[in-house]
Image (tube, rainbow, N blue to C red; front, top):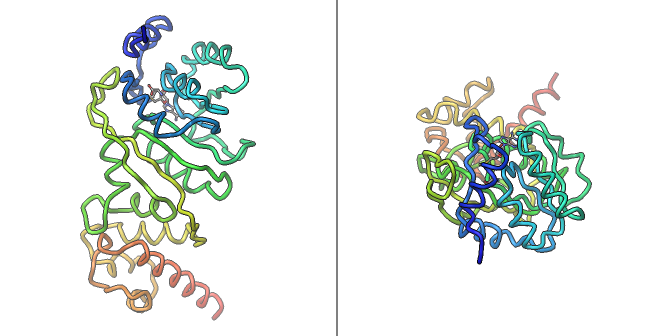
Length: 284
Ligand code: SAM
């Protein structure tokens, strides 16, 4: 008879005397349908996988049982180490773990390329984690990320232009990636139950990588959204340049708000801004 995940999760929590820590976003998945669905959609067979925050390891074991070529997990909470050691003793050849904060982790240390990330992310680090991975893609060309995040974060990432959720996060993630919502997950699928709904999303790099200056691009997007209700011209005035000519050059109406500018529009503004800055320096 198949073991019920909720029971086995409860057994692990009991055996290792685990007390879920709210500040580490410890809401553990026990719903076997959701776990299978995540692992199936991630197509883990023969892939090198990284899981952030394995916790009690239910998703972890499912990834291994589904024949991942290798699985590296990164967990901040060392109280899971005993359990992770046990998993390691069962899967010596293709499993390893690191006790580390993923936000500080230097991914350049990793030797393989084309990792797939499969994780039920802790809520408090989902946005910084995604932004970090997007930034380091030139150095660590990961293949795909299948991530459980708060529904509200998934909605911001997948928001369309001219909607209330459209903003810096949607633009930064969609600049070089395609994003797909895979499934919504109710609080009852976790122990303990979180207060909010969750969504599993898939982030995959676009075939054509836009080689733009992402630092300048990020700076422009941040300034344009600094006060959402203001006209883009007024926000950009912080730059102390001729904002009207920058926007004219970029074919953007100075009276619209940032939420009505598409990614191509932001690319035009940031590359024209870069040119303007260069020209001004050349004048000196
Ligand atoms: N993977 C397990 C599951 O699906 O049931 C646990 C997921 S739980 C939502 C998030 C996990 O991430 C916890 O085990 C937590 O300790 C870990 N975690 C929290 N902050 C972290 C960080 N900064 N770096 C690495 N792991 C972290």
